[in-house]
Amino acid sequence: MLNVLTRYITNKNLECLSGNPAKHTALVFLIVTIFHLPLLSQEKVGLTTSNYGGIYSAQLNPAATSNSKIYFDFNLFGADIFLENNFLYIHKEDYRLMDFLSLSPKLPVSGEPGQGLDYTASGDAVNAFEQVEVMGPSLSYSLGKHSVGLFSKALAVTSVEDLPRDIAILMYEGLEFDSLYGIDQHHGAFDFSTMGWWEIGGHYSYIFKEKRHNVFSAGINVSVLFGYAGTSAHARDMDYTLVDESILDIRNLDADIGFAAPIDFDDNQYPDDGAMFKGKGIGVDLGIMYLRKKELPTRSKPQKYCAYEHEDYFFKLGFSILDMGKINFKENAQQHSYENVSAYWERVDTVGFGSINELTAGFSTVFYGDPTASLQENSFGLNLPTTLSLQADYQYFPNWYLNTLLVVPLKLTDNQLRKPSQAILSLRYETPQLEVNLPVSLYDFKKPRIGLFVRFYYFSVGTENLGGLFSFQDFTGLDLYFSVKLHIAKGRCATYRPSSDCRHLEF
Image (tube, rainbow, N blue to C red; front, side, top):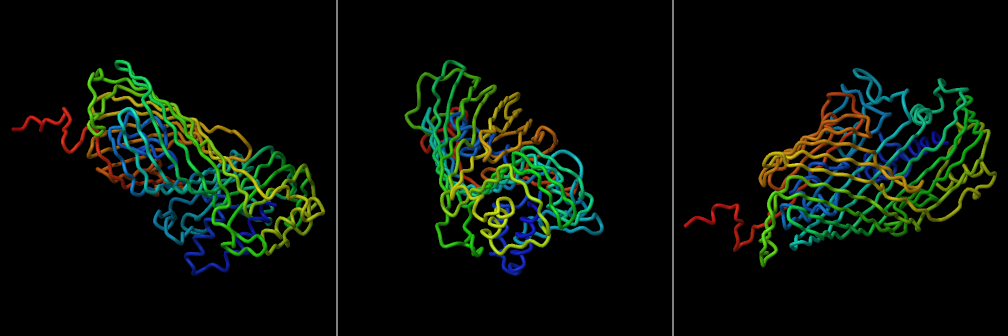
């Protein structure tokens, strides 16, 4: 069934888009956002762990802005692309970063010298994660013990969890791949989810307790979410045999699929005549932080917020729960259910469909004998990729920091995006003018990676996967992010200089 779906998307719709970059870009987004397995940062460690991160640090822990070194931060523009998987790869001899990032990506095909795009036939179930994020105009502002902020961003996220490798191989090779003929396959739960959305939100943090060297703060982000398109497919059980290229014996299928998109499902017209956003929702981040200061606080407080100086620390510890929320798609949406159905599907290799509604009607007819029986609702909901995050930051020498970060996904429902787990250790050198961060991470607690982040005044660029930028190894994913923003350090007022600035002694 998945192979039929893939062939329908790639063969039926891509042939009419050559030579039209706008349509090509739109359809690529929709394929990733609706059905297709990714061909292949989400944490942005350099930005989110920095004391100059501003509104970015609130994306990792909303309480972090209370202890920032800056009192005003304005993000002009930022972007992040993250791709990783354990199935598809490009041989290192055939990979060029700029070819991949162009408006018309040039993906290599099988052939000399390195055999181009390939896949790993053996191993664990397939897991993949893709995130493209654009951070728009955003700001944070410190008001003494309080910090407030606004942010806006657009995201496209895809996650694949525990997809059986034989199904992934059939999606890649097609039904003609005879190595899988006659083998009984039985699989438990696996998931595929993808969603594109825009969000605008507010941020608040507060130092709720400060006693001698100890500082405790808490923070929250609340966002309004506007869903552009999304799909969630959850299989609880699948038992099948591919008899040959024309016969698929499905002994049991227990699965649900929901989708929404700006496409006319009757004729595949894009965009459809409806609203641009097909769903709405709310997202929430919560965080707390403890900080151990080096010096005791001063008794007197400045009269101006900009005059509050940053109080240096030995270490700080943080705990946060991120991306709690859900988008409910109620426009141009469908929810289909296949509850323990079976079918002996003959001539499956000749099946063709002219539209998405014909596709769903065809599947429903095969399993139920009724073209509308599988349709349960004209709406569906998809949860955000909720994660638990633990952070620790230790200043072992002036301007030098050791940071640890642990990210663990929280499974709250079947219809949910899933971020991979990560453990990250980084060494950071941090000054107002220059910052360098060297993170070493364990992706999904299995795959080691090395990254690099550099900030020069207000421009930042970083990666958590240097190997994805160069041809050091076979390409399985990419991580690249940057930002352009302006900020003002604490204690920098027009009529006030901090005590650490010796220029106040000039006469």
